[in-house]
Length: 234
Image 1 (cartoon, helix red, strand yellow):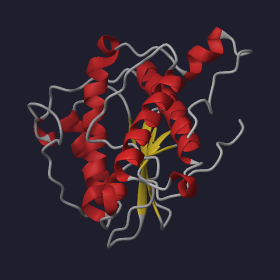
Image 2: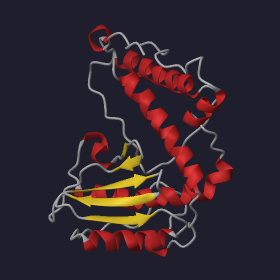
Image 3: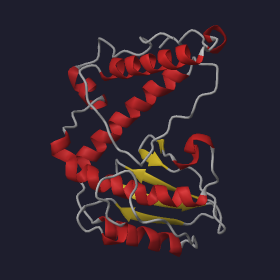
Image 4: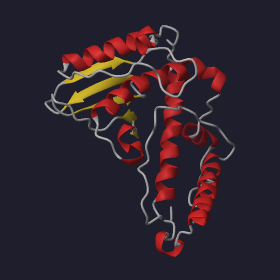
């Protein structure tokens, strides 16, 4: 499988490139990142509790949208609903299949406050769910209802992070498109929350994908001629 299917157009200005792949220095948004990570875990654990299991835990991931992230449809005894993070207007929206809606502002607030108001919004919509409030895959976890330590939200850096996710999603979608065998959907898993920056992000991602694929295909003795097709022209 080729690795050069995506490249930044040479005619693109530096300003346009910076918009697509904005700088995201960890120290500048670390407190916001840690808070947002916990918020996504609160929402994600609701999805984990209510959605039926799929292989590879596909049911728990979020999907990238044109404005942020979404849980997609979640079933519940009270009816289906979804939760959407909007990183442009900076709010969290809860929509139900019977046309009810609740909004929660994304702003500087503690994890405990976010957890309380999110669960209250669910209850107001008739959705009753109990979750494990201990964060997953982090060092020194603090139960959501007790976490007053993480309370930052910088909308500019959150928006930058989301714009990077949009580009990462694009690279993933194109890379997987010419593999004919089974492949997982492109999802954001909220357990971990890591990103690295690079001079050429697309190429760095593609080289990582390719090296991983080559190792897997070789070790498993896959019949690659039956599983691969030519990459699409962009």
